[in-house]
Amino acid sequence: MYKVARPSEYLVITGIGIDDIKLAKKAWILPGQSFIIFDMSPVNYTFEVQAMSSEKLPFMLPAVFTIGPRIDDIQSLHKYAKLISRHDKLSSHVKELVQGIIEGETRVLAASMTMEEVFRGTKEFKQEVFEKVQLELNQFGLLIYNANVKQLVDVPGHEYFSYLGQKTQMEAANQARVDVAEARKKGEIGSKMREGETLQYAAKIDAETKIYGTKREGEGRMAEIKVKAEVKVYENVREAEVAEANAELAKKKAGWAKEAQVAEVKAAKAVALRDAELQTEVERMNALTRTEKLKLTLSNNSVHKQIKVQEANWELYNKQKASEAILFQREKEALALAEAEFYARQQVADGEFYAKKKEAEGLMVLGQAQGAYLRHLLDAVGGNYAAMRDFMMINSGMFQEIAKINAEAMRGLQPKISIWTNGGGEGGDGGANGAMKEVAGVYKMLPPLFKTVHEQTGMSPPAWMGTLENSHSSN
Image 1 (tube, rainbow, N blue to C red):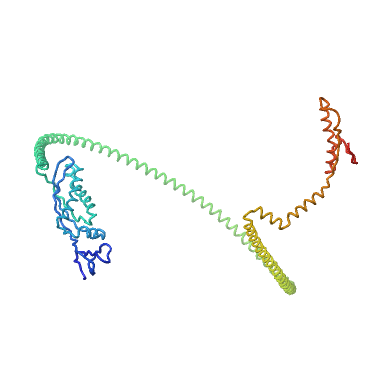
Image 2: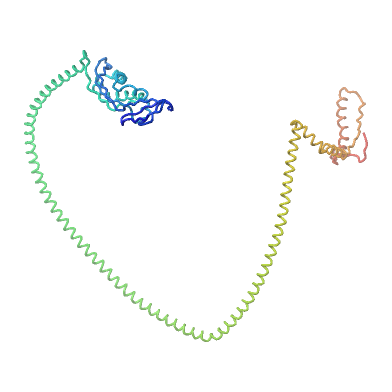
């Protein structure tokens, strides 16, 4: 079955193949699926909300709210479809739901404000109610399209606004009486003030007229003095300008005379300089003439000399070219020989490098094999490094070599043994004889000690301590 919703409607479909609900303008309704159609047009709700201010004064708040589904949010449409759509928008259920939210938020807000604040701040009060109600309606997917709060109305038995109106009327009447008395007072005072101001203004004008006349007379005299002073100053300025012009004229005349004299001197110097230049030119031309004659006489000798020079140059050129050819040939031969030697050396070096490389690779392989052998041997002895070391030393014959080296070292020492006696069977131990015997024993130890040092190292004691015999003897 194919269903199509009107422009202001939506299809809500549930059933097989749909996890929650599906909203659509048109859709196929399959078997096992159900649907309803809900209208999205907003509805006007009219209420008279009874609230109480913070002073415990009750009042009525008539209000008209235009509320409908939020069509610009899919989640809000889903909430509305699941919670509200199965009820008629004009039913008591929806109206009570909306009215409960509006009354609750209005009463809570009014309880925090005085009556005067509610009355004077109607616009702010309306905005607060609008915002708080909208927050509650969001959970149902509803949107307030318009809210109109009318004037506050008294609750029967509580005529606050009536008394407030009477108070305003009485205040207006009293204010009107005060305004009339104030106007009468201002009229009488104003009349007297106008008369006094007229007299004051007339006296002021007379005084200002006299002052103006005196001022104009003084200004006339000052102007006359100023004109005379300006004329005198102008005459002095003109005289100064005439004197300055005369001085400038005299200065220029002196300059012109000086320039004339300088010009005459320059002309005389120029004539003398020109004579000298002409004389110099004549002498130069004479010298040139003599030079040309000399060149003409020497031209024949110069020609022969040039021919000889050219022949010598040609011969030198031929010899240079021959030498360069021989030098080039030798350089080519030396270069070919050097390249051959370099190639041979390079081949030898490459061979040695290859041999060293192979030797290094063999050593590397040998080292890897030895390392693997040592790791295997260490594993065989259970990780006992001392046992592995002893095995390696035995296997390589190191203990035999050490014993052999020690035996050779002992054979090379050739120890000499000397026996000395110091007569230890004499005398007793007591008193001064015992102490002297100890000192005598120390001195008896020195000869064999010095002789042993001499035999082992070749060093002799100093002469002041004594000398050693050449032959071996015992004391």
